[in-house]
Amino acid sequence: MADVPKMDMKTLPTGLTYYVAYPYLPRRGNPNDRPMKVPEYAIGHHWGTQMNITAQDTVPEQYDILVRTAKLHLTKDYARGIQYHWVIFIDGTTYYTREDHEWENHCSNGTINKKSIGISFCCNTSTQGLTDAQKKSASRLIQYYEQYKKTPRPNVRGHTEVAINLKTGKLDPKQTSCPGTAGMKFIKDYRLGVYDKPVSQPTPPADPCATVKAELSALSTQNEDLKAELVVKSSELGALQVKLNDNDVICDALSHDLIGAQAELSKWNKKTWAQLIAEGLKKIFNQIKK
Ligand SMILES: [Zn+2]
Image (cartoon, rainbow, N blue to C red; front, side):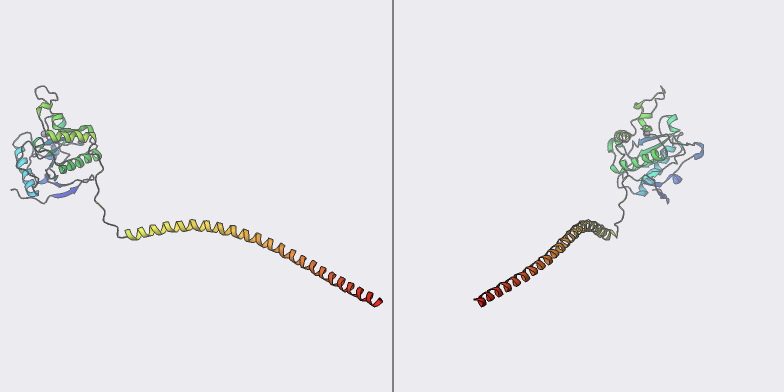
């Protein structure tokens, strides 16, 4: 098994974490000889051969498979090492295997090769299908090219969709079944927007102030309720004060009337006593006269 180099681990803005494998893989030629400014196409592939790849493979085993594949591709004179820019294993682990500013002969179409990146699922998608982990990695990878490299969505294709019949020079899907049944379904679903869901973000750590914030929020609500109640009570108090003032006025008027009545009563009493005395004296004088 090949020794595993210390590959960098990087993360795309769309959330895909991957290993940078290209500096270590066997290759030939100068990367600058085949410049590609913008990847106008993203082409999906699969590996027809299974190479005993399993979902349990770890990085050393996956790296070993990449080295063996690069060596296999180097046996073709038109290849300069591993022919794909990206490789996605069964468990979703992704390797950057060729820089995306260097074009490579990965699909049977000379024009498309010069302006496309090749993304390969390293399994036979017709017999093994695709795992959710592979679909997740692939969708985040293609989203990156769409959003940050402006690769148009209609140009996300399966190998079979761009394959050319060398005899006729025309597009001929029968030239290859690559990227396999499940791979081609994924590509079509991707174009239809099935994988457009927002990339899930890692759950942020629990807020240590959450309890205090909740209490503060409850108190704030209670405070607003009390303020509203205070407005109602103030209004009621105002009405009661008005009523009290009215009662004071009525009370003053009644006091005034009472004083008047007492004065009248006093006058009447005096007059009555004077009359009684006068009548009494009159009776006495009358008896005396008799
Ligand atoms: Zn292919």
